[in-house]
View 1 (cartoon, helix red, strand yellow):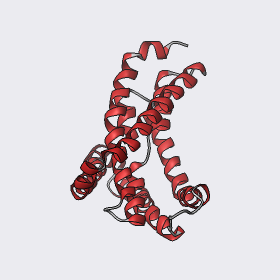
View 2 (cartoon, rainbow, N blue to C red; view 1 turned 90 degrees about the vertical axis):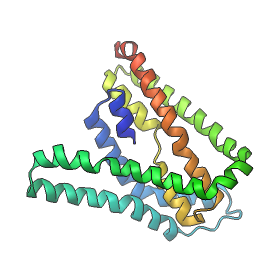
View 3 (cartoon, one colour; view 1 turned 30 degrees about the vertical axis):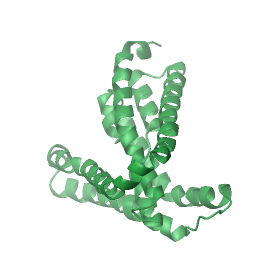
View 4 (cartoon, one colour; view 1 turned 60 degrees about the vertical axis):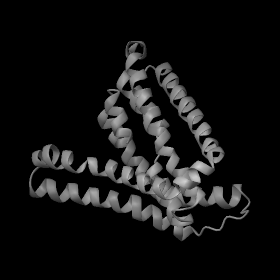
Length: 217
């Protein structure tokens, strides 16, 4: 989804695509060990029993498979039907399916957990407040640092949005795979994109409003 926010705020599309691709590869390699570090080492293993394979399987299934399919599709179709058709016809057609899949997942999970949400507003708030602080602090600090480094406006936008964005889709997949679709962990992961979408949409318009100021060297 960071590609959408980046385009909305007139960021560097090519730089954003490269960062997203590198992040995807790093997540495939590091998500499992980092998750286990927090679940077992930081928490002291108190009441948390999640195997490395459970996390790795979710990562490979929901991130590795789409990434591999995307690479193969690009190589095969661009050679078979041509670069122009692939870029102007296939990509615009297939692009929205990722967002539709995320929205469908969120809808189903909230339909299942509607009762839990109503009866556990306090827990929802405990997830909401840290996320709001995270987006505000991370995005603002990224903008200030990149502007201090005198980067051009498109690169400031791209660096700031990629820093503030999260792969909540993967978080939902791992939470559902490890704890179950009706778990509190899955509920917490589902709240993430509901906060991220309006906040980053707002930040996109705020960035455009301050474009002249951010463009000053």
